[in-house]
Length: 118
Image 1 (cartoon, rainbow, N blue to C red):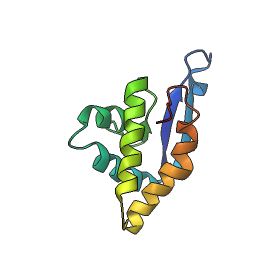
Image 2: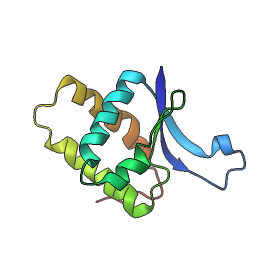
Image 3: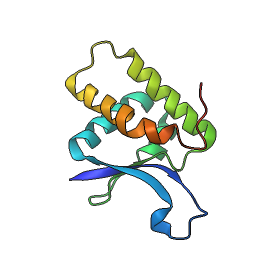
């Protein structure tokens, strides 16, 4: 089983199912990325955490950057990058989360119209 990460939403697209830019990931990668989000955003950034990592249902699991405004989006990206950069001896579990961020999320993030290089 797996889940999705939603990166952006384009309201100009007619079909609702086509409005989201997303990626599907395997459940163990999903879990490790969820742990990374917890470490990055809790307890200091609970609002960002709540928007990105909403309470998932039994069948519909997702993390979403789509509902963040430009400022929140860039703050989230900055916080995640800083957290990963500070990991000096990451565990295997943390390395899996880094793979999700670097190889799956980042390519979508940098193409998003809200993204600002820092």
